[in-house]
Every structure is written in structure tokens, then in C-alpha cells.
Image (cartoon, rainbow, N blue to C red; front, side, top):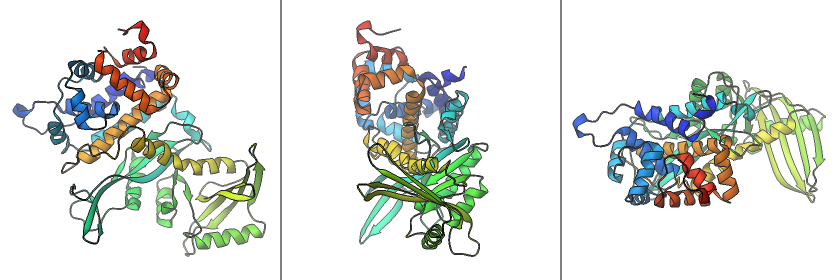
Length: 433
């Protein structure tokens, strides 16, 4: 199959289907009413069409037209009820689902779309950040993190996510997430920095040849994590705040006052002044074995007032030719918050809705399926002209677009996904074959 076909809806669906079909089914054969494939693909279809809950998804499927659309678009033979769906999915392993993220990235690479994400000499910028997606004082499972406040206990699920970003591109490319979760036999709760160490190892194992820059917040700009990035052969651009790096800032300020390092500024068309300064080869901290790193900071001054200020550390040598790109890369860290978590929570994906908690992996599996649906949408936005045309010429918002698609498949039967998009674009021509 041509690489560009892998990036269309059918190609992406088939990639997902192949992984679903290879997940072992430990159920007794004579008791199997619905295939694992049908259960997983039904859950994925729910996320793909941005249904707000399993209940609303099941209610839509009471209509035969909607059931038939699910069967024609997603190749689903039978559709389980909500309780069946949760019970069947709960014990499944996560790893086969995580490999789909590698598959998608390989398709993008073969299709030459990944090249556009390179910067700073052919490197790929990966933003890493954690987020909470479930919380309850009643519902919980053995993997839940716990936070006690007086007599109250709050249970919650967190995830550490890594996404490939570019300062000038709207679409982000998720990598397999790392759950921040408690495991059997451990008394100490898991935490974001430990998950960070795990995800770095997994990213390098999954992508051994990828030239990577990790960007993250100030939690990560400490010596142990920097050492791990170096051991993994990864560059870094990490936020460094004065309160966390007092000795580093003392060194930097003194040396810059003595004329070391570099700086420049310019004023943009809106009258804002952009100020850059940097210093190479300074110790990260005051310990004897501290690594030397490179330090840079950036300010925006509007009407004489500083309206933005941030600072970073990096292993990349800084000069006047790359300082602007380094700052853009450092600021692109926010794309994981704005274009990923905010979109998933507030733009129709209902990330924080409890689709089902389960006793084993259900909550995490629903998160991964939701993220895969988001990834498919990102790829279609990036590569599919018909999808781009429908999404951006006919609709002003993502929610409006998906609401129209859900409404349309309630009343009309479509032989395939492309027919649905073509009809939305030009309804007067009827439903294409």
C-alpha cells in the first residue's frame, strides 16, 4: 500500500484494526458473544465521534441506521452493551494499544510529513507534561493515586504524556502515554518525575534513531533527569526558574554583568520589545559534579513593563543564529497543554468524563483510545485534503464539525467514511457510492 494511503482514514483504521485483532482473548470460546475487535473498535468509534458518554453512544445505536453506519465505517460485526463493553475491556493489556502510536509515526515518516517537524539541525521537539484525567472520592481501583485531606480521601488517575510539537505547526503528534499509577507491592505512590524517567526509556527504545530534544517544565531541570537524558542520547530545553536554581542564576547574572555571553533585542510591529540573553558553559547547580549547561532567558517588554519572562537550560550551544529558535522551542512546551490536554478536556473529547473505571486497566484503556482518536484527527488535519476542506471551510469550531457528523449519521446511511465527508461538503449532490 502506498504510504499516503496509510494516512487516510481507512489506512489508519486498518492499522488500529490489525493491532486489535492480535490481542489475545483469554475468554472461554463458547462464552464469547462479541469479539475483542468489536469491543475495542466500538469504544474507539465512540471516542472518534466524540460521544459524551457510553450511555449516549448506546442510545444512538438503538437506531438501525446508526448501527449500520458503525458497521460500514468501522467494520464492526456486533456491538456490545455498555456493561459488556466495560467488563471485556477492563483486563486487557495496554501495550498492544501503545504500539499503534509507533505505527502512526512510522506512517507519517514514510509519507514525508514528519520532516516538517524538524528544527535546530534535524531534531524533533518532544514536549512532556503530566495531567489528571479522573478524580473521585468514591470510585477507585488499585491503580488509583490517593490524596488524603483530614478524613477525606481523593482518588485520582494521572498520565504523563509526550507529544512531538513544532513552534509553527498547529497539529501535535502524541507518543504512547505513561500512566502515573500505583502498582502491586509498592507502598510509595508513583509520581510524575518517576514516570518521566520511564517514558524517556520507552521513547528511546521505541525510536532508537530519532534525533530528539525534550522540552518540559521546571520539575525536570534537575541533575538526575538531565543525566538520564544524556544517557539516552537526547538533547533538552528545560524551564529553569530562579527559585529552583539560585546558584545557576547567581553565576549567570555575575558573568553576564562582566560581559560574558550574548544578548540582543528587537521591537516588533506592535511596539513590543523582545529581549534575549544567553550564556554557555555554566554549572547547573552548586554541587562538585554538576554538569555544565547552557542558559538563556527571554523577556517581552510592552510600554515599559515586562509582560512575559522565562528562562531555560539546554545542552545545545547557543549563539545569535539559534537563540530565537531556541526560545520558540522552549515556549512550544505549552502546546502539550493548549493543543493536547486543553483540547482533550474542553473541545469535545470529554477526557475527564468517567467512561468506566473498572478494577484493572479500563480507565487507562479508555484514555488511550481517546488519545488515539485525537491522533487520527490530527493526522487527517495534517494530511487529508477532503477532511481539511470540510473541517475548515464549512465549520468554525471542532465541536460544531463533530456534532454535524453525529447528526448526519443518525438519519442517513453511508457506505464509507469518505462518502460521509463528501456529503457534508456538498449535500445537494447526494450520497456518493
